[in-house]
Image (tube, rainbow, N blue to C red; front, side, top):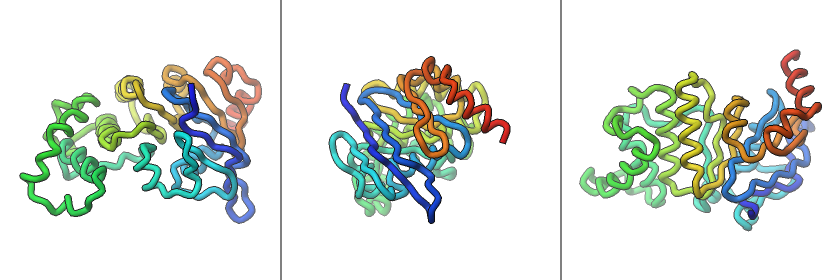
Length: 249
């Protein structure tokens, strides 16, 4: 395997506070890699550094062999590195199909698409339907997003992300706020869409991490505490102590 995403010496300081400290990470092409850790471990900050919503104080980020350290989040999305967010970001007043179609219009990079007639925009519909079907929302295609359950909204968000044709997905707590039925549905969806793609996800649900992940990186206090498969990291005394300690804070 070859590296799809690499961080080297990644550091982020906020007025003297070091939120992420000299972190190295390698995500191999075609794998599902999980980033976990107790609250306050620096996961969100690190994720935002990788996706360029924050600029690192020091360190480098390489994606598919290209140095993206100084690029913007929009630039890296165009390279095929696309993220989702912890809070579902869909347009509630639009239908499922229209939500996916909007993402496809953005893929073209032409803002004037939003002012075109419905007849012109209809050219996207067949492809958009394919993405909707791929995440199991075919029967809801003409429903307003507001009518969907929370889990199905997350599936819709994944459909819009897939419509951008990414080579790599970065998923920020995809199971956050879900009941068990939705967790199982989205977990199966992530496993299905991972074929031919690379995925890095931040996730608190450790049973999901155990089921989906090829490799896991554990952060604590902004530094890498452990790395390996689930059996390796779950048995690490340092990891156990970090989680137990966090539970007593």
